[in-house]
Image (cartoon, rainbow, N blue to C red):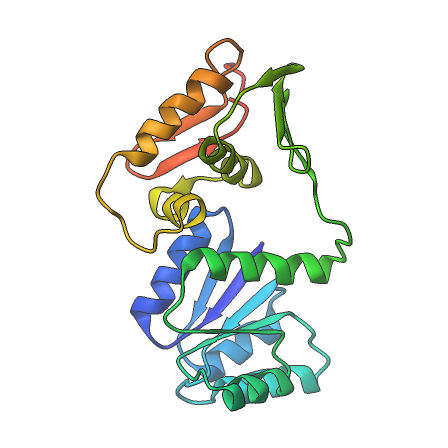
Length: 229
């Protein structure tokens, strides 16, 4: 997914860009409204993340201009202006979603991915996740590998689901804490490592190839290893 972040707060822009990049997405940043408008009009993006209060041209002006020219790229307003009137104003200006600061990155990512799916016309919700011979049925809560049932505890199931949904992309510790434990901070414990270790015993120990990979200094990734040439 190709995302444009139009945000004049460098710290906020870099935080969002880093998180999206770690999730496997390509991110461009514009530091003011006019630069954002030029980039959004001149490139093809899957989603725009736009602050309301921008120098040069405010976020509403950027989106109104894009919509007037027929640009229908999905827009998520990410802003400190969070009253009902502000949200209504943003949506009526052409925004598709609205998220107030401060925010949890996992919610931002989920909203961005939902906007991209909506644009792509994905009509049905996925109920079965597959990575190689590993299969998870979200309705029956059944997990198998090579047809063999795996007995997972509820937290292990949720952790594996997060990794499978992000297959091929790195899930940072922060993202896993948010998605699996609903933490918005790092409790400085080894809770993730303990659960990953248990998950490996069940998912990888008796099967080939191993699917859960540790990304040193970053987090974990579930993917099929590339063949050695």
